[in-house]
Length: 565
Image (spheres, helix red, strand yellow):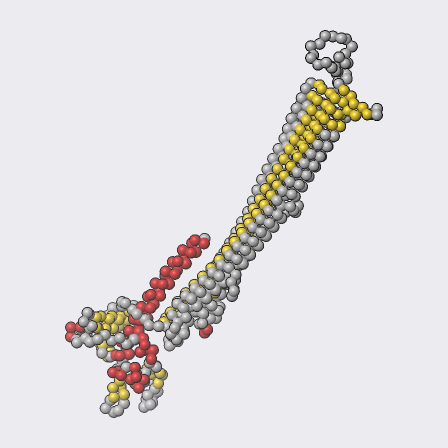
């Protein structure tokens, strides 16, 4: 037995017993060249191998190994020169490492301690110069720093300074509360906003509730989201998805490579498309002739190269153009080069060659593609101008083709209720009959046309007639007639008249022209009149079909707009 004067019997089984006391607690002291190197001390379930820092004592059930160590609280472990485990259940391993209450510090100069002091650290620091400086913070990696409570920093020089924040990757930075930064590698970027997420090389989520995923992705306004390489969402509640997608304004959405929105509530979907008008929609892509663009307020452009630059405009179809305000273009190249306002073009190339009307602001409708007849701007044209009578191109419905009407034809005066009625009848034997009534505002039939004359309610009973073949002359014959302004040579007052020349009429309707006793030609209006009726019927049939087509297109458009919203 060593260290005890009296040879007292002992029940120890060891052959060598080193006994110490409270005055000299160490069992073994180590020296080299006469200089103290450290001691071995086993005391109260504690172990010391090395030396304690000045003024410190060993805590119960603690372990201290190394020079100038501190293991001063219960159940602590300090391993390494200058290692300090100062809080209950703390572990400090590594040169100059430091761990406080319930914390773990592992690595050279690793620190797991609370900035507020006291028994509240409960942190983990692993790695050279890793620092866990707040409650339940975890720092893993060389120079990793977790300074927010319940934060996690993993990776070289990673920083998690917000409460409940997570930073993973080299130089990843999570500064906002509940923020997440993964693989950022940029000290001036990361997840800076509260509840923000930044994932990817050089990604940046700098405002609250932002999400940035992808290399160089940036979400810099509140609740913005940027997904994919170099995407940028700088407006609040904005969404940018796609390589180089850019959503600049609040509540705007840009989806697709280089898709771009620059105004509030704008939507751009497709490669390179732009929606710059407020509440505008652009869906398509960059095409050879143009890029899908919606720059007008509440404008809609759908289709490759579709352009809607005016306010409240709609362009649907490849290269469709709605450049004037309130214009609607539906179909390939519809309303092409049309810059005036209040135009509707439906059909491929509809309205694209309306040269004289391209720049005015009159309400005009073009339905159907470029007509094969007379090279009209569309099969059907409707013009709503305030021009005087006779200027039919500005005030009329123009049909470049034949019109078939399966039903009655009415024309009325909206001011007093007087109207015109046309009826066509026939039977299985090929007999036909035609009746035209002119009704005044008292609903009284004033006159009608029969056999080329105008009569006052003359009898025209089917039972009194031998009805022959149906009179089929119509729009084709009317189109061949020429109408002139003229005066009679013997009329000294020179009263102006409008009508056809008998010689011209004779070429079209031979039976309508007779030679009088004086040698001059006379005409009857019946042939032309009923040909006009047939022409009107043809036009009415076409209008009805086109109106039905137009209504169906409008329903489809409304459904499409509802899906987009």
